[in-house]
Image: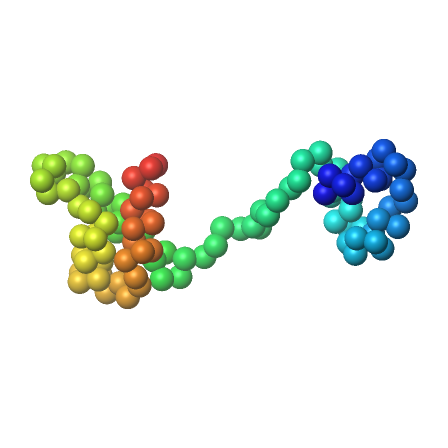
Amino acid sequence: MAEIRRKVLLEKASERSIMRDDRIGHEALDKILASPEPLGYRPSEPRAKPVLGRFFPVIDEILEAGKSAPPTQSHTARRIFERLRGEHGYTGGITLVKGAVAAAKRV
């Protein structure tokens, strides 16, 4: 990216030659020239969570109820996973639940 910017802006290489040599389209070249920093990957929308998505309110509810409980009765991610599987019919894996619990505790 920086190399392309340097060629076009400092060395005055034609945009058409850059597009041909680097095999990029005019839209990509316009983005490169418009931004001083590399843009990186940006998803257009957050990824869907088809397995765990409908259980987020349940996880939040369990964690909220755990705040008023004594420390010895706190819910671990494994315990929340077991409750989701037993009480709510969750069929996904524990790793997804661990990630969701960690994210919910960060907020």
